[in-house]
Image (cartoon, rainbow, N blue to C red; front, top):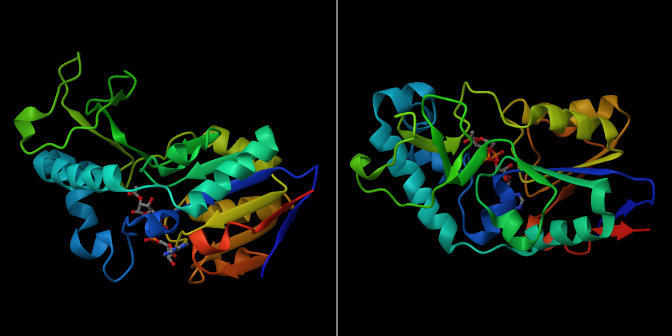
Length: 238
Ligand code: OAD
């Protein structure tokens, strides 16, 4: 069984993708029966899709809210929350996922670079902070408005938009001596580049997942298996 040894000087940067929530029952994007097999990115996840048909965009994200509310964290999420408890501020988690399963497992030092399912923000980017929004919308007329008058849209980074918290993410990658990447296909940038940035800083880089990602050659170690099965017991903290 693979073991990742973490020394007292190590700082760990973790990047997760849809694969870590797969065993909680949430579909990944690029599997044969994944979210992008049944829905077109250009219909539900671009600024143009929102302009053209906001009702369809809210329909897609309302369905994902309903699925997310039913899901529970799995042992992969729990293993990361436990690792954070042991490492404190030597641990940092960046997730591409928009579900809240990491928080519900107990993770605190985390950022959602692609947004959060249970939040919404003003379509006009008027500068007001995102608001909590867990509604399952059946009709566009039910969707609230910002005080500036703009319609609320899902707090999701659409394709073509800049991911969130990039300065903090880059700073944390610079500090890291170990990068652990879990359950992401390595097909969406800039996240797919994080492993290269970590390598440039001299970090060890480990991937966990059942299939090799597209950027597999950049990892010093690939641990094959499902996150919920491999991650408990993977870390040896010294
Ligand atoms: P993908 O669907 O592209 O990849 C999911 C990865 O999870 C694959 O490499 C699978 O092998 C792996 N996987 C499946 N089951 C697993 C398990 N039990 N344990 C561990 N790994 C498993 O999803 P992402 O890489 O997360 O962006 O996709 C990246 C971004 O593309 C998403 O954040 C989303 C999407 O379009 C936006 O919506 C902005």
